[in-house]
Length: 463
Image 1 (spheres, rainbow, N blue to C red):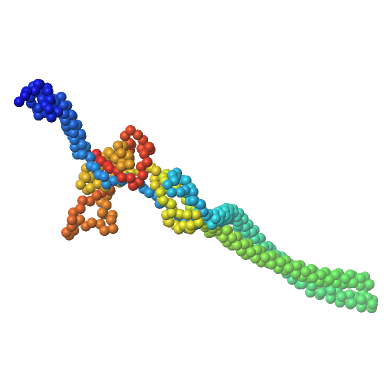
Image 2 (image 1 turned 60 degrees about the vertical axis):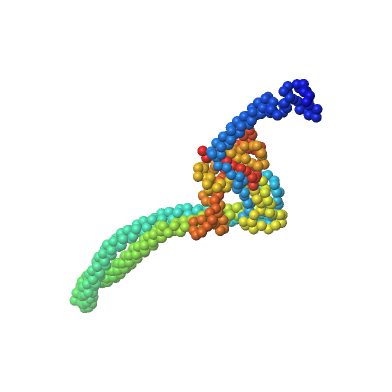
């Protein structure tokens, strides 16, 4: 067998041989390669150990679930009145701002009702103001009537006092006139008593005159005696006539005195009647004062004023209702967001409570994560949460637990599970946990379109 030189190749073989003739490939890889492999393996093992420990630490400190999605409080835009749609200003997927006009309903009926309610309020306000003025006028009129009636009372009292004084004076004057009548009657009697004596004197003087005339004619007596007897006769006749005249005068005086007495008595009766009349006027004035001063008059006017004001308030409420109904014809966006679904068309008559549009909020987006009941034992409100959104690979969103559901999902189902009675198969329940977004690492939340329904994975830091 021929030998080969060291490092020579054997025919039919491509591998080198050493100086002893052995195949170098049988002794293992090159030491340099072996060292490199050892180093790489060590690094891989070290990295696996480091990341494994980190993963283990993270996993023990966090509760993770992929049964989670972005959620939001979707708003159903409805109509409060039954009316025909006049205009629509938005379309599906359009962004809107809070207060922006979305749908305009026909407002002709509501506007007419508002104008009518406004006119009714104006008219009733005028009536209420007039009623208030009537209260003031009634109070002023009552005061004036009270003053007038008080004056009438004082005047009637003064009239009674004056009439009473007149009556007293009249009574006293009656006594005076009665004394005059008595004196006139006495004078008449005295005059009448003097007439017979005067008549006897006249008769005697007449008889003496006749006798003297007879004697003178026969010459038995001197004519001078005749003249004396004639003068005595004339004196007796004058005295008789005077006595008769005195009787007439006394009769006239008596009649006059009696007339004065009658007149005075009539005057006294008139004074008494005046007293009665003044007392009647006093009673009337007192009654009018009591009537004019009655509180019910003002109370009645005040009640009418209050009723008118209450009617104003009622009509104001009707006006507010009409104004509200008019405002309901303008359906505006209650939040900032996007039109998710449009269920209304122009010309359609909508009913109260009917859904016209669905608005998805642009803000206040949150995550609803359904954790197993075995995972929430250490969860608390405010704990930090790592959020991974499937739509944004490699982006780490940071949030916090806002609240935990008060019951499991099954509790709110139509047929809730009865885990506490009878024979059952135990099923681990899930409880919804609401998580709010706080920030995103290396960016701004506003740079990412987070939409309800997106799938996410959440990890709550419980330790």
